[in-house]
Structures are given as C-alpha cells and as structure tokens.
Length: 227
Image 1: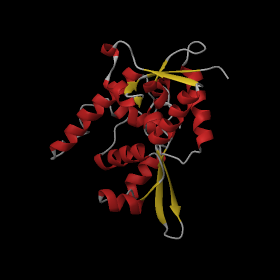
Image 2: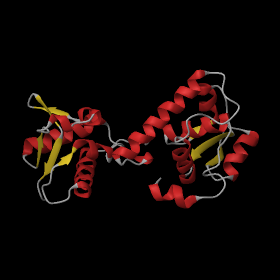
Image 3: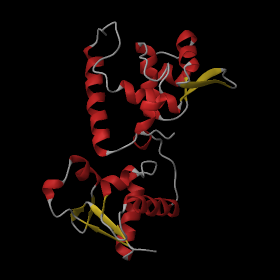
C-alpha cells in the first residue's frame, strides 16, 4: 500500500472523509495496525466480535475494506484497502469517536494517543505504510540491498551522513536485530561508517531509539561508501 499526504486531499468522496460507527472504526484500526488479512475467527478471538452483516457490507461498498470467504472454514477474511488506510489517517486527526459518546474513558484516551501519534508521524515525515507493516523473513543479502537502496534515497550527496532514524523508517519490514547485524558488518568492513551525533541537543527520542551501539557508544548517523 502506498499512501501520500496528497492522497488524503485528492481522494474525496464517500468512505474516505466520512466517519464510521464504533465497531467499524475499531475494525479499521485493527486492520491498519496488523497490516495483513485478518479473519473473523481472529477478530472474535482477540477483540470479541466479528465483521459481518451491514457493518461488513458498508465497509466493502465504500471500498475501505476488501472481504472474501476463506475455505474450508467459510469465514470471512478482511484486508484494509489503500482507500481504507487514507480513511484511518484522516480519522486519527479527530479528538474523540463519533457519537454516541463511549462509556469507557479508554476510547477517549485512545483518540488522544492517536492524535499525538499522527502529529509525530507528520513531524517526522513518515507514511503510515512505513509504520504499520508486517515483518518478513529477509536474507542478509536482501537486507544489505535494502539498506543501500534506502540510504541512496535519503542521502543528498555521495557519502553524506544520514540519520539512522530515517534509515530505519524505510526498513520496517526487516527485524531490528537483523538490520543491526548488517549495519555492524558494513561498519566493520569499512563499507559504511557509523558515528554518534556530535550535538546531543539535536537528538530526539526517536533518534535515541534508532541508535546502534558500536564500540561502547551509541551511533546515530551512517555514511555508505560508493559501490
């Protein structure tokens, strides 16, 4: 799924900016967070309800969710569409759910959290599909290739310093420990260089979280030699 900021303004139409009921909204956020097909069996076992009947048809007709029956169980499985992801991005800007006001204060807290998350996402220039994506098994060679590709997209000049925060945001499908192993080997072999940020006042919480510890210190920047 590819979602850009422009899509939200251009998509328009029913189903993107319109708000949904509580149950439909809950399903939308679950599908966004898991970023894969989710069956009614899994929904029932994890959150206690399924997506059926008018709720399912409403999301399908608005093209926010694709649903299909899974054999041999004949249970529906659901996947968020690109349009559905755009809807989630829009919904996170609201301060509370649609009426009626939920009895649980947890729902209000959730929207406060989602709003703060959306502000962070915009501030860091991240896309939702970069954040919510399933991990996949990648070989070391595939991770090396993705590291190089991400670096060259971010670097403004050959051998430029790129923050590990930005680099990791483009490598979310790979496991953290696998990426760290590749970065350490590239640094050890001289094919890349890892260094700390000299001005610690510039570091954000995200920068601290993305740092890799090599040689007894946290490194926040990477430069890759031209191949």
